Length: 185
Image (cartoon, rainbow, N blue to C red):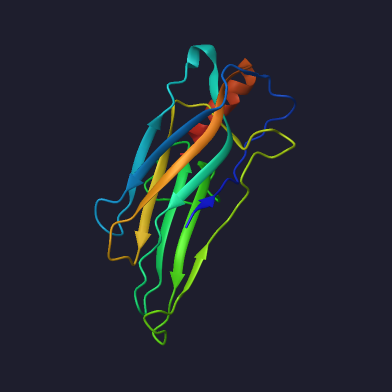
């Protein structure tokens, strides 16, 4: 089961002066639960230069969570998110610091047979908004991959790939982006 996601975008009034300083970069990583149904997070360093007001402009996000376990009479879930600051829960796109999220689930009830259950996977936009050319901007030095299963008998994992490029931002835009990320914790 593979899903591609992104919903959250921060916009500031007027034109943000972004000067592209790299070609497209692909950042791939993963996270795995230590025990079934426990929250786990993995921090990914972008090594941005705050002195140069460097940001990472995200143009696409791909999240590939494991399928949940099929357990008779039990609904199971695997939730994963990418956040711009650390979290203690997976969260969802309703949280301002969550840039993207994915959910795979199997909905069951007690009357279903062992091969029963209805699998669901959410599918959100694949690429950047054509009006802005990006899906998000990360101004702090890292982002986080968050994962937690629910109702599973086995540990779960998720793999992510973030597509984007490095850019320099004007002073006002950079200051607003950093402030927004730090306040979203």
